Length: 170
Image 1 (cartoon, rainbow, N blue to C red):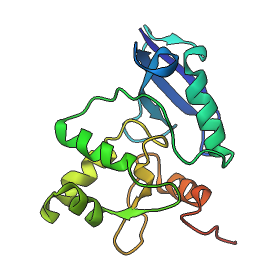
Image 2 (cartoon, helix red, strand yellow):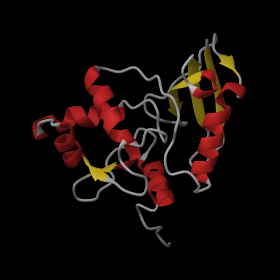
Image 3 (tube, rainbow, N blue to C red):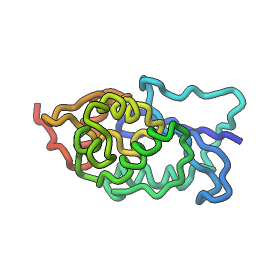
């Protein structure tokens, strides 16, 4: 069974999608977490069950994260990708809260040729679990905010929330 629910957050309404899992805490593994107007966002299917109850633990952790009380998510994921995408996504999970890394450093950590940085960027862009799998923590070598499927403004908001960027005064 596939379940879905939404949750208001400081970066917009989050769409959580998950499937039954015998090994996941609470019995559900997240398959997608997306935001409105996100490139490649998940679209709710008619046969999915809308029910927040299976997501109780994910919702608790997301609320704690946005309250500044949770630096690392402890959730079960069941996102499907190519072998390369899954390697990249696992590397994203290792980027500590409040820090950033560059595409170049990530290619080095994965043992990927620097000529494959575009493939790395595509794998990061295909991450179906925004916020909880921190692709927002990957930036350009010059400190520039490169693409983010949900928009660079949200990437900046998440990095500022985590303390990796200083808030700007207007």
